[in-house]
Image (cartoon, helix red, strand yellow):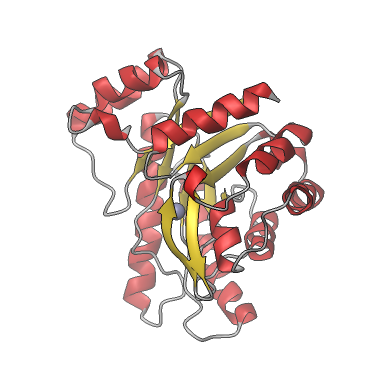
Length: 276
Ligand SMILES: [Zn+2]
């Protein structure tokens, strides 16, 4: 991507139920760059909306990303649930490709009390099937497991980066608020943010920093990780130093703001970034 884009997690809140056409109009007025399509409760969109989203996003040069369903667990103890999870990732990638999205993300798995290396092997097994299927379908969209917000969920930074190294079509979706929450307060200083970009650049190369996908929000957390999203200014999320690190490493791609006042916080992020 040619620069860093700031987008909302779903349609702007102030759009209410006015629909996609108006949502893009609002994004344009607010000088935001696009939206993440939220398929968190299922990969569904009616044909009219598909046509509309695809056309308007292309016309207005809006960036689209897609978030897969929450009900994904590539480490389920039940085979049929793994198969259903694979289908959900594939369906998110398919609709993403159809609508012209840049990248899709999802929460890959839970540890289910198993050792991390065993979980990793199981996820690799599923990812092989996902990448093979997408390859056969000619779908080259970025597939991104997200860094997760709870220590019971698979997906710390190292795991996500390792999986990205093992699969050509996979890159990280770095949810900085999740990293901060799952570690009960770490990952919140300029040096820690720089270390994340350094690690990704070193392990995955410039392609990962030039095609980034990030989530940022204020977040409430405790020993068990994330509790809920907060407005940036009402949280301890050090977004200013985070954006300084983005700038320092000249990271390009999509930053999705997931705060409860997402369009306002997306503007806050974008304006601060542009002031640097
Ligand atoms: Zn997510």
